[in-house]
Image (cartoon, rainbow, N blue to C red; front, side, top):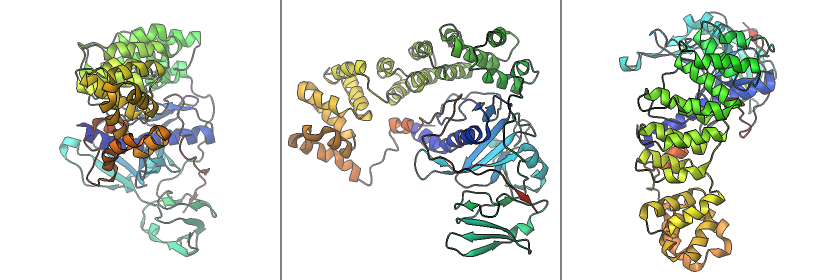
Amino acid sequence: MGFKEDGDFARFVAMGAVGAATAADVLRDRYGHQPIEFERYAMANKVWQSKVKRLRLPDLLCVRCGLRIEARAKSKLGIVLSHSDTPGRRWDDGGMRDSDLYAFMRADSGGFPPVAAEPDWFTTAALRSSVADARRSQPKAASEGSEVTLRWPCWVPSYGGTFEGIDDQDRIVVTDDTGKRRNYWHWRKWTGPRYSYLQPGDTFEPHERIVAGIVGPPASLACPGETWNVPEAVRSPGPVERIGAVRALSDSHRVDVVALLVGVAHDPHEDWRIQLEARAALARSNPSRWAASIASTVDAATERERSMEAVLALAEVSAPAATDALSDIAARVDLHEDIRAAAAWGVGQGATADPVRLLPLSLDPKPIVAFHAVAAIDTVAADMRATLLEWLDSGDERRASTAANVFARTGSVDALLDAYEQLEQARPWVLYALGLMEASVVRTRAGARLTAVLRDALEPMWLRELDWLNSEDDDPLAALDLQKIRFDPLYPTTLDTPRIAAHGPRPTER
């Protein structure tokens, strides 16, 4: 895919990332779980060209009770899962046990990032027991694994209202937001048991709640507490259980746990993915030693997917040693450009961002590395400003254009005006950078410094905001900006988005 296609796909993937973080938020705040990201990048929307063949894992994992969770956020709510008859690609493959949970929710993609609504929850066992009554779509092409879509019958109202109950004619009765009383009798056509998921008096928003369906709801979502023996699970014969246990120990500093993880990290018979997770867990408590150990697995002779996964793991470690390792990897010209680009992204967007290290990489001869380095810079620190001003005034087109773009993308109006007033050779690039920015931002931040001469020079460039034919579809930096959704894998939260209204599972069966 190109940058435009990556950006389009990132918008789609963002729904899943926000959905997984929303599910984690609800389980933690309302039901006492301590969820972490189980499948790496389940709560991120960055698109990489080099694919990693991971073990198929659920999205989330509770480190207290071991519960596994799959989150499904779609623009149209329903009990819908992808399925293939190919072994390993069935809808319930990937380590989901009977007691584990699926969370289905609507994602509002009207803005960016999207916002997920209240999840509806079902156990794997409940879905399995009713799968015979799920509707199968026509299969996709054989190149896509002949995949089908399974849809369990359910009702999601297209209007808001209040659930009243089930009347004596076996109809769902609701009062819509206009005060009109409505009946839903179509559920009588469904085969097997039928369930309503609300209690009389419960309200619902348009398109955002599954009011009724054929899948039995869970009796409780509450975490039972510290019931998972994680050290014992590390020795489990099952790889999903083992890798989950290793990830669950990522925040532990206990001596016995460290010894256990060291054994896994050095076990020559262990799967490389689990070895890497053990090293990543150890790097959180001893980054000076284990960040270098992870980085040592990145090599031109190594399979690219292993190097990519190592880079992504390093970006999750909150320590300068991890950023040092990423910076070294990004500068290695012997490595594939995708690996170097991922390392550059980790330097700027990882757990310990250090954007000043991205300046040399922004001049890299490999465009994908340079683009990722520039796009990963979100702020201009004081120790970057002098270098960028020097580049603006250097007479070197590559350096000057890079500096102009970085200043423009970070809204550094004052720095640009300083350059305009003090560096005569830099003035054309300053005008270019100010012209790239939104006119309202420049006017507000410049204030009285926006002279009539400057304004007259910038007005023609700002006309692009009024040009209906203007598009950012071909802008690689704009496409990369869309790919910055990343929730903390150990402490996920959607606190920056509107909070979810409290609502627990209180079903009735018909």
